[in-house]
Image (cartoon, rainbow, N blue to C red; front, side, top):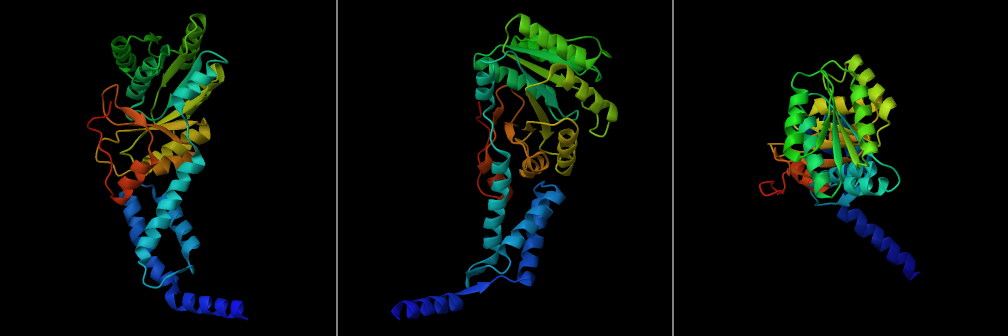
Length: 311
């Protein structure tokens, strides 16, 4: 009898101290967060998905009567964003390479993405990082389309002390990649990094070119390089490259600028693959492992790490 009375009292206390969130109350809050996400460079389709998902999970849920609905939505939104990153998984890029080269050399990495997003500089940074880890590297200039592409890579390779495999402009990009892999095999080198042409992700010739490189060298890892400043465009670009070529992970560049972090969410949502590194400056050492907390803090305006002393 006392157990039954205790349960009745619990239900009564819960009823008077809690309330259900209703759709009208919810909609205004959701609309505000939608605008905040878009202004933080989250692609509109991704922002819509997040708010719909939050609405579905919170609607009619009982909450404390005097709690702040806006704060409830914010915390649930953070949870949904973190889940996007966690479902994509994590990759320790350096340790992955070290494990794989015990079985087969070289480990071949193909870099994809539009021009101007920092592919070549990212390759130089990763080559520097690999050398610091005691790994031997050769770089292939399979961008035989863009004027100055070969010279740009030559400059980086000379500074880093890394061998560059190149052909002439207009040459077959897949042939350059093949020669780099063969060079590495003959000299027992650990890693081949392949730079590629950009142009637009909608360019059919570009995608055919990328597919041919993949067929010829069968890369172990395909990296999409995205610019943190491009917002909605990064979502479309990443989705297209992933659909046409398939990617294994991404690098997000230029996050040392006035970036709010949303592009990272868009890329991961579009590809369902993790971001491996963040580019945080122009120096070779300005590359760091991806950090979920940094992205969350950026989007929601909390204090976040600065990059002034990253080495």
